Length: 144
Image (cartoon, rainbow, N blue to C red; front, side, top):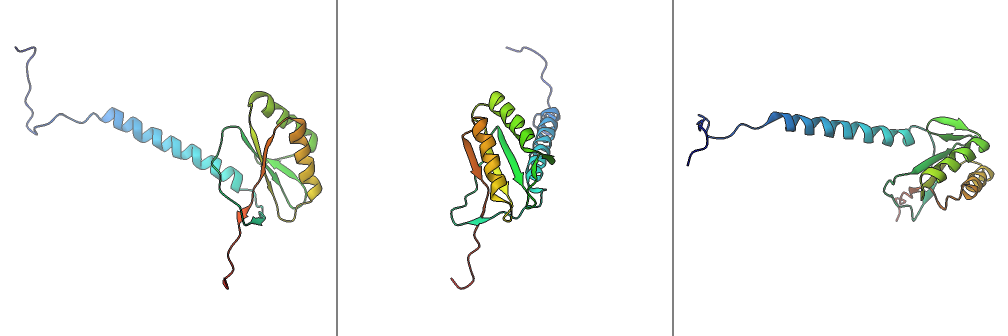
């Protein structure tokens, strides 16, 4: 039983559809561009993180807010310097719209502890309970 005319191709196979392949290439390109922007946003700010034995790298989660505490005591979120009342408003909105959101405090090694406590107080007032501090793994000494 024959349903339609068969065309024989000289190369012996079906042609590869190019449109889906081009779509996949463009989607992967967009994916890598977007992820590289988020990776550079948090590392563009020049902060010397404290070291710790138990520092582990954690996976990024939706709703994470990076609060950068610089050595001079200024607080930076998304490359914008904010005051404590502005930080409180931001965290209140995060708590309202992203239930279970988390805050990661990237504090400079020479930052004032009082400012870190003020950031923790803002998190408490916004009912954000998943708060952590960023640190880097301690470098082993050469003599060990």
